[in-house]
Amino acid sequence: MTCPCGSNINYETCCGVFHASGQTVPTAQTLMRSRYSAFAKHEIDYLKQTTWPPYQKHFDEAGYFSRAKDSIWLGLGILDSEDGKESDTKGTVTFIAKSMLNGELIEQREKSLFKKKNGVWYYVKAVG
Image: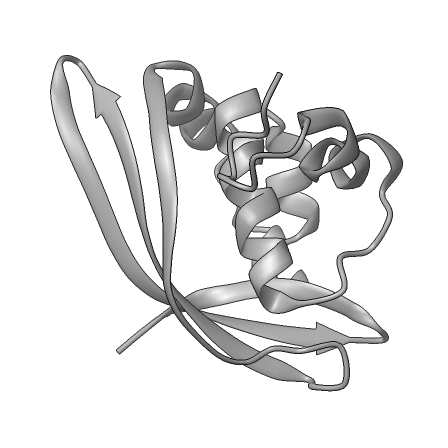
């Protein structure tokens, strides 16, 4: 099965590697892609683990699970990336995530901030 992140690679060798093994992602964009795939695959624990640590205590697992399972995930488009490479400690990724929820097309466009702490990338928040 092709990975939901849009890489045209098999899920198990793409985002599935990060979901199953806990292996750290190399870049902010890779984390963005793996988080989109986590929604599509209902990997809610992964979404929580890759959220900026101070925000994890307020992570709404039930809400994320409901959104993930009630949606049909249609695709992810990366519009822009600033920094967020392996040698960086922060970066942003602008994306559009498409899904269907209750028969309605949803196009979530967001510029997300990612930060690296102790060699691990995390999603922090939407910016701008």
